[in-house]
Image (cartoon, rainbow, N blue to C red):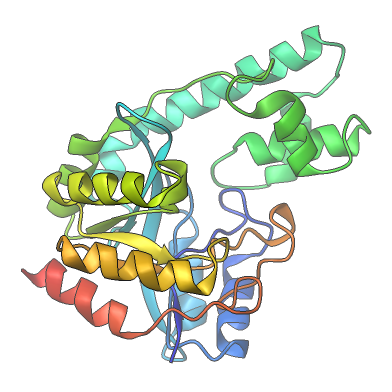
Length: 278
């Protein structure tokens, strides 16, 4: 049986409502799903109600981390609103809002009349991020896709990119554990890009007290997924996985199945729960 521990809804940068994600998870035959929107928990209660006793549901979040290397995102599960982690994220959310204003101002200076109100209408709820600004650029005819908006304007090093405050890896892990949760590095190809780099990074993740690493991921060939899972297990990390589904913001990736060949074994949930209890 399969699970999906990496999903995004309209409360961050996905285009499916939380209850739609639950419907798609049920259609895919999953036993467990997690909602992991960026830096916030607003969609959790809606997803939990929709899941009810139909499918196992784990509340989660995805965190952008400040550390001394390429971009690292940390998934956390069994965390929710009102937790020590939620309190620690208040400053992060405020920084994200200020960053959005700066990006929009820069785009205006470049001659692209995106407005804060327009982006808010696109996001409708939850955390506003760069994908919402990208969709505003699409609506205005500046670009033809979210990917083009990032390539031309919004990715790190591009003219409209602006940084924001992020949790350090040590603080993030501490806040998650104090909130009763567990952690895993998401899509580790953002940290390393070859076998030696992955091995070095995985050892460091374990030393930092991180619980797992996302090995079953749509962008990795099946053989690489298995190799990464073995590598993670050797250093004491739990191999995890998920589709990272964002709906229309990441075309071709669906809940549970990724690009059609993703299978994340349900034993992962038991291993994470055991680590959480310990």
